[in-house]
Length: 401
Image 1 (cartoon, one colour):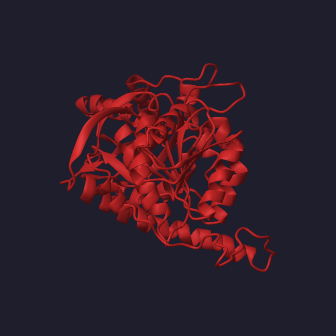
Image 2: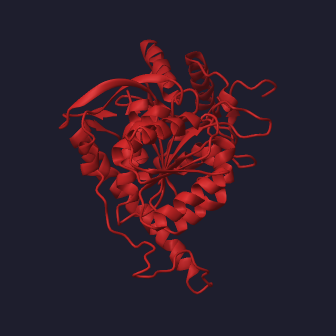
């Protein structure tokens, strides 16, 4: 995150990332919220419910019987022209999976918060990113935040992007369940939410209207289905530009600018560690220690998961010999089992950069600075040998190689 001169007055408060979501939803002036509780998402909806009851948010809150119904409800409301919001985690996101594709295929600007959590079975209420990574092909723009401040800003940006007529795709904002969702941090929000509403204007779009009837999501035969899905491809390409434009607009108003991939001490680095979410703070601490020992190492934080920032990442890899990708999810049976590493490898190959895929923190297994340093030492061994494994390294698992 880059700080620049801000235009609006802001106040400093302490919020959890879940509460930061609720404050952002309040400030963008949503119309309809659909809710079903699941750990660790629940306090998002509890806070929004409290705000609606207190009159801070003028919105309809729909209590539903499942996450499938929660997303279905906001699909209907968005199709009718409402500004909508929902949130979920883990198995709830998986139960929504059918409707994820319907929402994007109908080009509905839905925004959803996902405090990430490990998937069952066995049952885990702790954090990793296995739930989010299962949605990678659902045609949702996806941002991964690493601080409560960014969670607030990303929710605001999500509406700016989703409702842009060049895009009209749903957006997920993901962040670490428990590690961030229930941890309080200081952040800044505008004193007057008019500043937010000015940068998230209401836009006209095609909606269900009895005076101008339209059909949405109808059955389509092979003569046109391919072309309709290709329109989603083009919309995701447009989203790249709109994400950059809205990031600049946010910086002009709030004084904070975010990039699709954000470097840390990378100027003279020969080695880079790439990861996402709250783990990046630990990576930064480890990099500082390794720098003191004379290692030319830097970090890269992935913020924009979809659309994947190919060009921006390429730019950061110009002087890098080795990139270590730390994933917090497993792509079972893939050649490389780190989902983000799979995306990084073709970009790195084009730049002549070696890649080592590490998997860590599954089920919220603790990852400390010494673990990051251990991964770097392991990767440097491969670099010295000139032979890199055609698989991921499972760091910290008992019984592993």
